[in-house]
Image 1 (cartoon, rainbow, N blue to C red):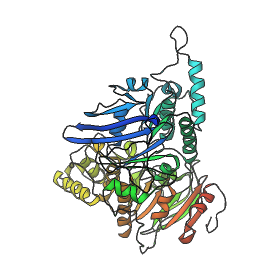
Image 2 (image 1 turned 135 degrees about the vertical axis):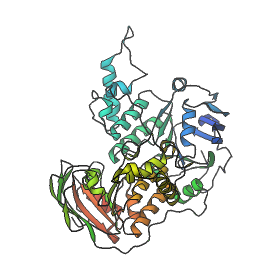
Image 3 (image 1 turned 135 degrees about the horizontal axis):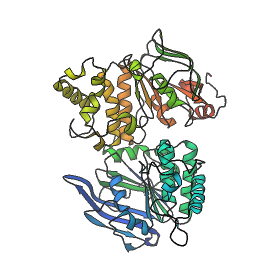
Length: 523
């Protein structure tokens, strides 16, 4: 296959080739693509072998999605060639690509919200009985079976629009699997999934590769890349930066270096900070069935992680503190005063701000500009918002863009045109117009690349150094271990572990996450 992980086989611009042409499923050579004056791809090479998983890595905006969409027939390249199983490959539509067995599951599902789950899975690839009528019974049976393989028991008759983000992602993946792919492209498939669902997906991928099916796996989660991928290809600025065989381990420093172009790029833990007095305190806090009696204290300038398996009440707890959910019992103290917020505005005025886990649906106005999104909070909190000078808002946006290193053409650019990491910086940046005392972050680096992730945590570190308290729910334990002063573990709506110092280890976190007593944890 490709060379060992200790010898990079593809300097930028050189093709990565498999040792045996008979093993090659997909060969991409010199692919180029421009969008107006922007060069999205500049001579990209890629080789995918039969029965192997190729991890496609790169910073947001490096060209990964454009390349995958070209392979899937959604975008026509300007130049270059592609071959599949030794035969020239050219298709001008996703339907033509699908006929060749090339299927893509997108990061953001494009489901028909009013149609039931089973119809979405087979939409465009309907199962028909004799006479041309849709075989509803067979389609429902197969849909149930595919979802079961992914660990889901969802009601296939419910409209897709009522599903959670994780549910919709599973339907998108199931739709791809239902088409019996020869080449499957998975674009950030696990961003919304819980650990058990990821394990089921990986089992399904291994069943596919055992049949000789090739998989291109795009992800920013390096732990998952190491667990499922046989080969790695890193992209930077629309070019192939490097490729190698994993041999069961990853070199994260090399990956970050190739992604950024900085040979000294590393992920660094935050510096120690002096902590202040208690700023937020919960006593027996209850809200619905998700938050069932939470006790915690947060000190000024402290960065606290919130860990646990998906769906144990972490996101709901942040929403309760931020005033997005009603408190059913217990007490929420801000400084020395008990607070019962009725609206998010009540907590925002106290400096308690939430960065939600779904930036596109909850954190941004996608149809508005970067500047409008950054100025929204200041406008919303102003007593006379119609009197705010436009020049002041423009200066605020420009200063925030500079401070957070947001990569944009300017405040007038649509926020939807930014990469995921830069969109997340906008979600955080809009709160900088307020005096943030407590910043609540729900999976803040979901779907962003490793370099943007380090920049986001650098922002959090700067805020903490200035006295802001951060409470962070993250689905990746290593992220919390690297950046937090303490880690709280939730299980069935309660805090069951309070880890700090030497007690902050992955085994102890996982023990608490499964409801088992963990040594060194305060329940």
